[in-house]
Image (cartoon, rainbow, N blue to C red):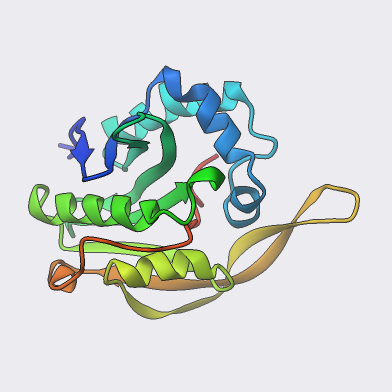
Length: 212
């Protein structure tokens, strides 16, 4: 029988992580059209509201139902505004491991939201779901995402050479693929010992390489 993540809500001092819903369509589409999101993820460009609606109503529910992962909206507790996305994917229920990805909206960067949301998700995975390993993959030049991984206690395990496709904008405004390396990070339950509750980061992006 396939294991699945529950339909949950995770709260921190400033954030609520919850299931995506159709009210998130406009904000999600706007966030995914940001230049940095386009550069460091495989999210289709331009990203339309129809694409956002398909993600919310079809892709995310299917990923959860079939046990592959979980997509969570990251929202501000006070304003309920969408500030980002946390995604779990490539989940192995026998090994109790999953890959964590995150995107933060451009207007919300620099507030520590990426690390706060990632840490809360990790604490829930290790505590409630009894997971034993979380993996992150960041592009070699994506220092913002690497800083988030470091702040939540991740350990760099090595480099997957030539394994990442990033994007760069050409002079005529089109996006072209740019091959680079992946840095692989891991987080185990014991790595959270002593990790502080407050973070200061510049926002971050991991690969979102499985999303089409």
